[in-house]
Length: 462
Image (cartoon, rainbow, N blue to C red; front, side, top):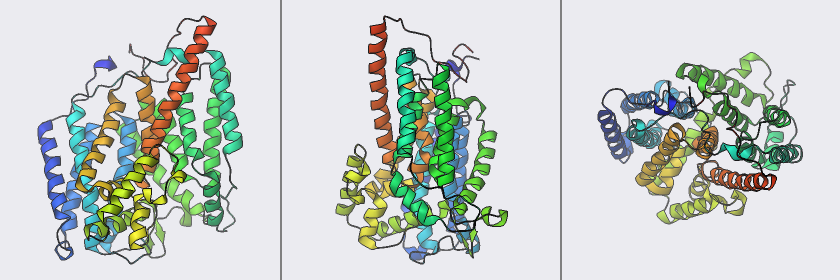
């Protein structure tokens, strides 16, 4: 089968799928402005039914792209997070502010509008998406010169040795090491996630044994370092990146789903290890006393305390536009160079002083910055990333979208600026720098362009 012409057609009537998504977005966007007393009862069941339909549509549209499926399944887990409260009344956070069926439902509606527009834009591009050969090889012939390859990995190993900081916290002693974990985060800053760029670019520079050894060693040590320091998100990002780069032909919907379930349980257990949990009963649980506690529920609650004050008119547009302006600046500069209110959660908290569980769901950020238009444009951006990953013939675009999808645990659940915009920008700069030195070195050595980089996936001729 020639993968260059294997169209990813949406079965059935695409216009009907798109119309359903657009209608769902309109109805739920209108419902979020209803009075709180009108949002009680069993309305949440209707929202759940619509969300499940939208999820099924997205899985069907992207069923042939394992990388996109990983990002989607991770995204979907946050839509399920309030269900224990809706169905059984089980608390999902240890806070009381804005905790009610109506408040949670308004937040869920904002998230659902984003999901509906994501389904809509994915439907628009489904019939035009083609699966390229893996990986695309158009730009790869300039990256085979040995001196560039060896120098790159010497620098990469030096980055690992001199920038990976922090004390191990994973133990079986039963002691709580959360304070050490927080100190590690402050000392590490964002260098671990910037190192993902090094690996993405380095995947083009593994033609020789020394380079391959350094490549494998850097990934292995990165995973070990993150595990022993309690960095769950960073560890997950590297796993997804490596899978996107080297296991794409094995990432069927079934395999991705099973791996996601297993990964969720293991990462949940890893989180409890920071507090000294050592036995199976305390490791493999989502309960903390009489509450359900997980990353998903805490992120949902944080967005709940961003969305509801906006809907109640407690946060002026000037504050929201100011946060958006700072966020755009932070898309290019390190976050430490910009006031912290570039993060919409912190901007909202500076006005309301409401608590937050951590992070913030992507839909909450876009709604805070741009209202309904923000949800519309944010969904279009994410759909464009998915479509580009599936359809591109360019190695540069393919690696860029692999990097962006790999960092989806960060931009879906924490903030959609640094890892969705800034990392992408830095990757493109790094790619062009490598390309510049490779071209100059090849010209100086008098070498002709070499063959395409080696792959673990199907070739263009298969």
